[in-house]
Image 1 (cartoon, rainbow, N blue to C red):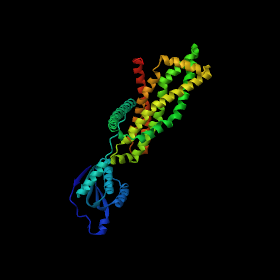
Image 2 (cartoon, rainbow, N blue to C red):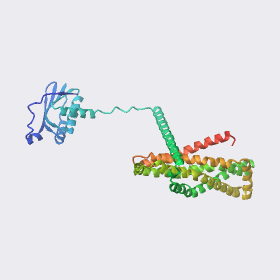
Image 3 (cartoon, rainbow, N blue to C red):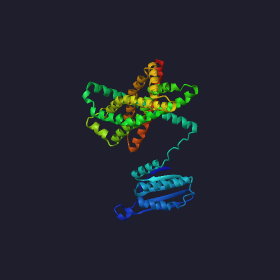
Image 4 (tube, rainbow, N blue to C red):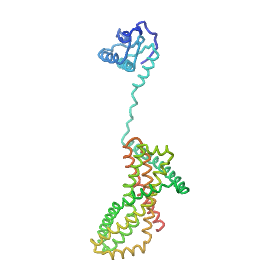
Length: 396
């Protein structure tokens, strides 16, 4: 298809006449090897729709060359240009070459833009199943690397703000920190205690069931004490808090981000890291060790109850056996509690980071909340494995 400039013909209507401005017509002239369509007058939306309907029923085949003459057109809008280009493509589909003759430069520009807009996008390249899986894994790896980089940058910013608060303690929002301590600590006591108690029951029951085969039921107390104090107590507490408090951090800050409250803070000269992040991080870092200790006590109580019911070991015998274990493994309690502040910082950091990353709509709040819970639990378990390897290598 070729668009060429041509001189305006004498068939152009008188634009001073209102009736002439509304007039629009076309003629189709065909000979042996040439098809000519003469377009005249005022072509707007109404004229274009009528012409499109009638030209669809016109036989345009049989010619080797097609010419659409627009030199007598006084007005051409976008819909009319679309009809003209559609007509030209129909002629091309018959195997003929098409030439558009235009006298007005504005009409020429409009036709060129419509032609470019009708170019279909390149077909999507299909990948086989293996290539698609590899591409998906690569995309996931890139997203993970990007999130890790951003999270580390967020941790660095938090360290800078904490150092600023150490230098200027009055910048610490103590009331907000205490309120968050109540929300993430005191209010979490029932669920942490219940689940820890049940975990202790399960560990004692399963441990006794396995040790009974060797006549070593009494060592159920050893198994329960070491596993709860060293690993299970604090790990279960961190997972519960990640699902309970970490998700609430993301949802709270994310909702504030959607409502533009975070932007309003920045406008007023307030740092969201000081106002929103630091109180939550410090509150969780102070309360998680206490919750971990409480979880240890409830887990041991659950195990002691199961030992009493299943093995006939009374509470005095349970305490005596537990004291013997702690006399040998005297660092078990401190090893477990030493992980708590690290887990707390990770959970609060991930929750606040994803809350500040919320954008767009309320759907983003739900997506970021899910990601923050999964990511926090994943990092906590990885860190627990690293702690276990390091403590074992140091023989602690």
